[in-house]
Length: 178
Image (cartoon, rainbow, N blue to C red; front, side, top):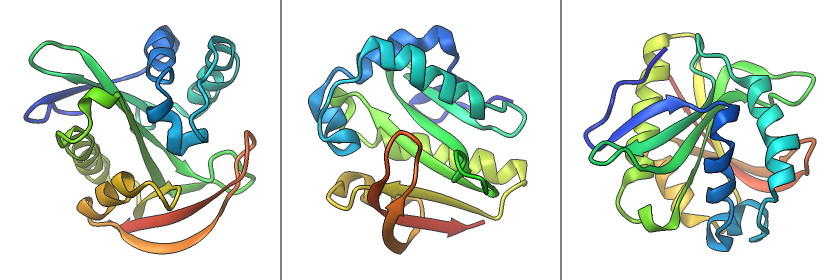
């Protein structure tokens, strides 16, 4: 499966060969501020934790994985969009409810790229037709992310603990029925 280019962006599923891009993105404390309090991700964590996690939920036929986002004008990497079933790492993953997440380089912030990318991927997933809703989570203080959720048409559902094997976190949940 391939996502059509948007006006300014192009998309490609990330693989283990993209580990350098993942690592570089996670080397900015501001990028990581609402992910883990601003801690930088080590190369070992990328290779031994995050790449295997990504591989475990990547399913090109369903559109699941981490979608690399590049600028069309010069093919430079600016960030990524996550797509995977909600609660994937639990005993009860929601295969008809896909989680969208995003992480973008700081120099791309404030230009609408994350919203443009998330909207393109949202439309792509709706066209595939195997889902009933899309969801997103964020730390409540991450106002920029919640604004993107609202622009995608998502509605606030609740504030609760999101359980994950690498650490539980109190977040806000948003979703949109498709």
